[in-house]
Structure formats: structure tokens, C-alpha cells
Length: 200
Ligand SMILES: *[C@@H]1O[C@H](CO)[C@@H](O)[C@H](O)[C@H]1NC(C)=O
Image 1 (cartoon, protein in one colour):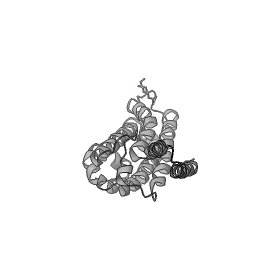
Image 2 (cartoon, rainbow, N blue to C red):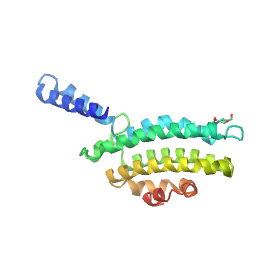
Image 3 (spheres, rainbow, N blue to C red):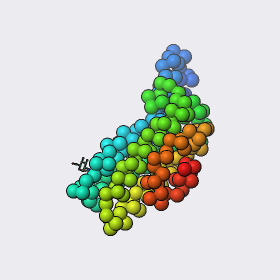
Image 4 (spheres, rainbow, N blue to C red):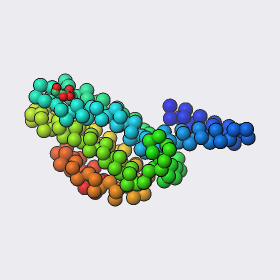
């Protein structure tokens, strides 16, 4: 799919180059496609799926804090994170400018680095609050089973952020002060790599 969209983007660009009649329309299409691969749009796509799942974890109670309920939610959270990892990996090496990387979700404006940091922090806090809620409600036996799964979710986030932080100049400095509230969860899950990456 990524290959296909790259091909069609190149094709559209070629059309635009040869079409004298409607260059503006073709240019608009190219811009619209680029907007779907901005960092904000990748996060929004992933976290539209993740938000209700993370929320349902926050409201776990002793009746539904079971392995049968929690394990599928963790896989459902991992799937959009894997997609996001593929998407940010594809951003690398495309030679996109900072402005292109910072396009808003709908592609209509260029976000400030601080605004992108806020968006990412909001998503990370939502996710890790949910994961933390699991730790605070399950007993030691179930925690022992679930912690490796939660750790793996954290590693996916780590892999996404390694790429994103390298792409956007100044993002780390803007992000670090926003994430104090998830330090405890990251520690509890043993996600030292993520703590170090985020300078927490
Ligand atoms: C657990 O039950 C509570 C109370 O009914 C509900 O709010 C919450 O969303 C449920 N969580 C899951 C993961 O099913």
C-alpha cells in the first residue's frame, strides 16, 4: 500500500509536470497526499483507534480486570502502533522539509514544534495511563503475565519516537517537560530505554 501510494504520488507528479491545463489541481492533490503522511496525521490515525481502548483500561474493575479481557485490548492497541511505526519509517529518507513533517492532521496548516509536542504528549499520556491502570488493578500473578505484553507496547512507542524525534528538530526539548506524569508507569514497566530516549 505504501509502495502503491508512492507510485501514484510519482505518477501524479509526472502528470502535473506534463499537464499545462490543470497544474493547480494536480498540485493540490499532491499536497493532500503529503498531508496524510505528516507526523500529526500518523499519530491521529493511530490514536483514534487507541483512545477508546486505553480509556476502557482506565475503568477496569475487579470484575473485568481479567486476562481474557485485557490481553485482546493490548493486541488491539499494538496493531495501530505497528501501522504507525511502518508509516514513520516510510517518512525517513523522503527528504521532507520540517514544514511538511509538521503539517496538521488535515494538512491545512503547519504546526509549531510545541503544538506537535502537545499532541504527542496527550496521546502518550492517554496510552500509558491506560497501561498503568492495568498494573494498579491486577494481582501479582496476572501482572507477571501481562507486564511483558505491556513492555512490548512501550517498545513499539519507543521505536516510533526514535524516528520522530530524529526527524523533527527541537521536538525532544518541547516534549520532555510534558511527560512527568508517565514516569512512574514507564519505571514500573521497566521501560528504561524510553525514559532515556525522552530524557525523563
Ligand atoms: C470494565 O467495567 C467498567 C464498569 O462497567 C467499564 O466502565 C469499563 O469500560 C470495563 N472495561 C473493560 C476493559 O471492559
